Every structure is written in C-alpha cells, then in structure tokens.
Amino acid sequence: MGGKCPHRSVKKRRYSHKTFRRGKFLVKGDDAVYDELQKLGGDSKSLPVDEDLPGMGQYYCLHCDRYFANATVRDEHFKTKRHRKRLKQLIDAPHTQLHADLAAGMGMPDNGPKLMAM
Ligand SMILES: [Zn+2]
Image 1 (cartoon, helix red, strand yellow):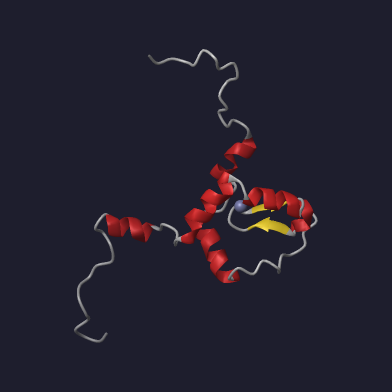
Image 2 (tube, helix red, strand yellow):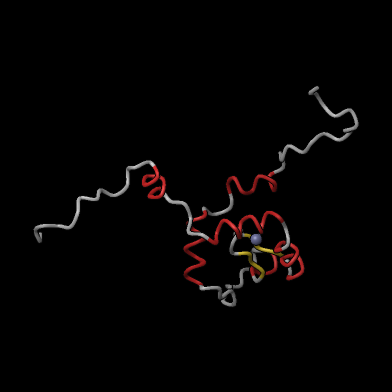
C-alpha cells in the first residue's frame, strides 16, 4: 500500500530554502573547480583577504566554492556528506562535452595520420 506514512508528522523537507539549493546556481561548475584545483596544486595558503567574505575569506573550501567564518566551521563542513560527494566528483577529471560526444560516437574524427603536410 502506498500513501503517506501515518507517523510522519513533519512534512518532508523540499529544499525550498535558498541555502539548500545553493548547488543549483552558486557553485561553480565541476570543470571550473577542477581547473582551479590543478592550478593551485593543493596549495591553499595563498587566499586573498576579503572583508566581504565570512572569515575574511581565509577559510575556503575549494571543492564546494564556499567560504566559512572560521576553521571549526570549515572542518565541520569537510565532514559533511555534501562535501564528500563533491570531493568524489572532483577526483576524476570533469565530464566534458567531449566525453559526451565520444560516448555518443561523435568524437573527434579519426581520419588517420595526415598524409600531406599543410
Ligand atoms: Zn567542501
């Protein structure tokens, strides 16, 4: 039998609040974050101080493109599911249009080696 669980008194969260939907419109694309990761090479010491950002922009999660007020909050964030998921995604190179094309059999044309020098 379907229907709602009779014991559920609280409505299921629908992620209507902006923070929950942050991923939809604030976080950078995977490829953008990946590029930055490659650039920095894991060096996160050179964060620019920005007074407008929480914690003067010193506590930043590169993977999620988020700033935190202090180290504690950031460390807590590192333990969250959302962050771990993000980490997992970014271990591999991001999925690009090229991958999609290749998968669809529309990759770069393989016409063999060039016979004539242009
Ligand atoms: Zn994170």
